[in-house]
Length: 139
Picture 1 (spheres, rainbow, N blue to C red):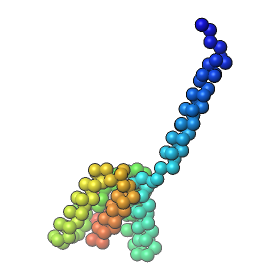
Picture 2: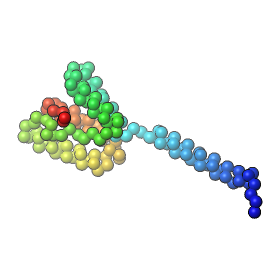
Picture 3: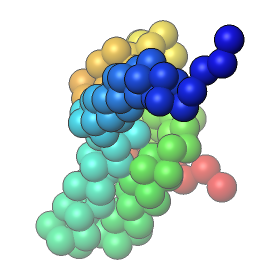
Picture 4: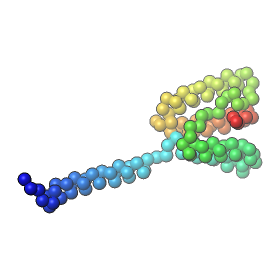
């Protein structure tokens, strides 16, 4: 049985066109996905960095948050500030430990993927709260 090129074109051309359309639709859907946790955290840290630089006039704090913004945007895992990095009284250590444990539990159980914006806001806010206690950057 001899098959000519024209018969092959008639059978495969519609399939290839449909496959191409599916790939274009899938690629378009992927391109329009909302930002993820890293992008939201990066934006939040950058906003805090700008505030620290322009309103608080604290260049060291601005650099600290700008570095966190850059790392987050690069896709590096940024953990919430460690409680041990802050100078806290005993009562505040208990409160901060509990808050950090709850936050990291939720982040590690999928909140970065299932609720990226609220998860990023929670982490940035926690870190912002912790810096008031003279956080010593880990080195």
